[in-house]
Length: 528
Image (cartoon, rainbow, N blue to C red):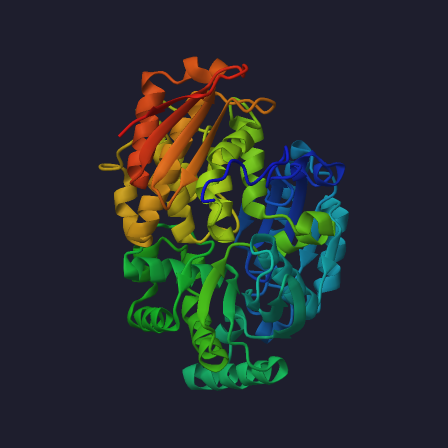
């Protein structure tokens, strides 16, 4: 039989219980994390669904604690003053936002400086923030856990560059493996004596040692840290890439080599004007680029991905029980968005059950996008009707969602655009259409038209008043309506059903079932 009613018969279907409803998740609903690095000091307050938290507050101060340490062995005096001022502010902000005690860590500059312990004591005395100084191996592990927050089950090599160090960590099947640390930070490389020749020799020797420790790492290379993100922004500008979302941005080794040459040919002002990278960050980019070139040359990753998640997200991941860690961050974020913004929270699950017969044979990676679209189908209802379709598209393509490739963002956005509009001409999709295939564009449109129909029928959780059956071999799409649901199937709903069948290249068929009586059959109306 090539038709099916409902492949997800349980009430919660594929979604399960919302993770943010559990006591463990609520305990993580607002968490403040401070990262005192060699170059910057940052406070992030996470809020929302614990498995895929929103950035409720995010502030960074470029203090330069590690500037000049190669010569003095001490924290930069001006950087120390600025870092303390920033931490005083963060302590007050945390009280206002109700985060509870801040989770605060310090990395390479503070752990290596002679006056690092004195700085830690001063921070506690002046701000009440207890600063934990972590070693390089722990820094690598936490950064890798941050990557796992966005990529559950990911495999590959995590490379985190700070101002004064670079850490590498293996991840495989959602677990962190071997971790190593090095002194290849751009602040240290800039202060190295002997110029470019000496610097490149140190970089090559150090990366070779790292490779010897870890062995071959030919899977994905995940890049974590501000210097890598700056290089990615320059790569986007050089390529004219249309979607300026850094998380999950992909580069090939060839792309990266071209961008490193581009960086070498242009001065800091030109790079800043092209990419929007700050002057403090762009000054360190050439040193970071030299390191990255050597990492890619020696480790031979099959592709390169930017992760916006790192040590701060790793600290949050550290607090999660395993039951939270294994959940899909995309679905959890969409569940939270539906609960917060939809007119009828829970309706997305019902819509999924209605359209599921169209997707009984699809790959799991596509099915999760279908689920996400069902959950997000109504979160933009407050937007003006003339802009609602584009608002949906923008929300999906630009929102802070983990576990989404850029092509998947565009697919999801296009499906939601078609939830409200039959046409996409003249929308912002046109600037991003090159990121997905023609087949995916067609499938996204079908999904959007299915959502558009389902939203008309006002289905309920406890009553199966309507369901679809899809017969792909015969190219027949059947809509089965209970008698009490027939009034819902007005002219607009009829047109939307025809539109969905047309997108599938199918013949539409409507079966209206009256209350069962002896000897009475269902009425069937067939449209050609």
